[in-house]
Image 1: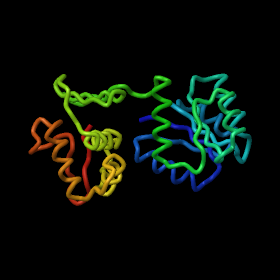
Image 2: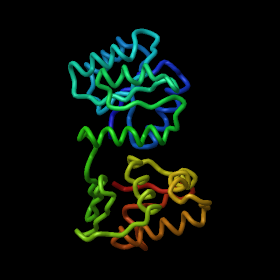
Image 3: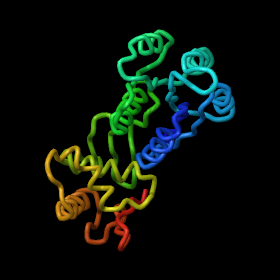
Length: 223
């Protein structure tokens, strides 16, 4: 799993964001102070840092400068909306991107993935049995043969890949495919797309080994 250091002093944002990131396949450690962040950086290896500018102790600018002077760690600043000074200062200090508050969690995840790809820290391929996913090109192969997935099917497959083996409820999966479909997606539609996905990636779709039904709860991806 991708490991994130979240340095933010708004408890509501921290609580909401950590849960969302976990559901997206990330693990986030959080703190609201510069000194504690430095201790966490010394003790753990992270793939990316999300830094608020204003902290209870210290500030994001000093922390970013310290990070960039000692580590090859990507940094995204969380800035107040319209705060041009913070944006420019952060980028001048070596930050890799910024996102203005309030932000949509899915937009932040997209920015995180984009920065990780640019920095070469994002996994290029995902392999399981005879299926390979090229995460950069968005292409799926089975037995070294290109498998066509629609945008919605691919998004659904990514939800399973990023689940970390956790059970995904049908409501959670509906949330995942809503953005791609662009129109109303109901429970019956989800059933249809899961069947189509199984038909394309499972060796025996009638007895799936990858996308397994957990009766009464949802589905689990057996990675």
